[in-house]
Structures are given as C-alpha cells and as structure tokens.
Image (cartoon, rainbow, N blue to C red):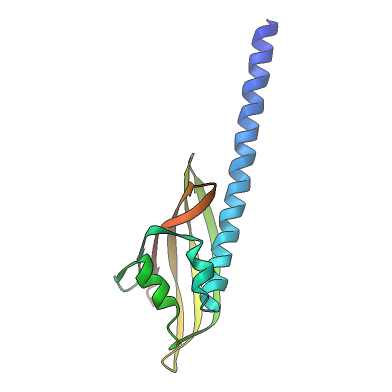
Length: 145
C-alpha cells in the first residue's frame, strides 16, 4: 500500500511539473510571437533571425512561399511602413518538443505610400531545439471582406 501511495505521489508530481512546464512554454511562445511583431514593426531582421529556423518556410496570404532568407529580406523592405502589428485570440497547442501557435492578426500601415489594413489568421509551427524555441513554418491568410 505504501509503495502504491509513493508511486502515485511521484506520478502526480511528474504530471504537475510537466503541466507547469507546458504552461511556461506556452507563455514563452506567446511572448516570442509578440517579439516577432515588434521585429516586423521596426524592420529588425536580426531580431527575427533568432526566432526563425534555418529551414523556416513562410506562406503569405497571397500564396507566396518564402524561404528564411527571402522572408528576412522582405522584412527589410522600406516600401512597407507598419504603424500597428498585433495578435489577438492567440492559442497554443503544446507537444513534447513542438507547438502550434495560432490566432488572429491586425497589420496597419502603408505600402508604397498606399494605406494597408490587413486582418487575418496566422498559424506558426515551433520546434524546441538547441535549448530554445524556433519557428519552422508560418502561414497567414486574410479574412474575407
């Protein structure tokens, strides 16, 4: 009986620690998504380099597919001037060494001097490797008007 109680206690403790780690990682990922927005807002490709993996692939709302290099180059485009980039209703589905983060986004600003106001959804796939989280895939789509 005592062995069963100890085993049950150890299993419960391990479960609660794992659950706590998942919540911590989910919070970290939401913070990384917000840092991503700030990097885009300020054309800071160097900051984004730490968040996206070497094998990162991005699918834009118009169907354009970009590699990491193309995505980071596009981020530096001076024709795009954002005044707002925010995420809402963000959810995180955690797995042992990966996570899927999804929600809605709002981007506002100008592109080539013309007003831009996009609202849509995003899905980002993150992998935990080398003691940190890196995004390996991102997809956005616009809401229909």
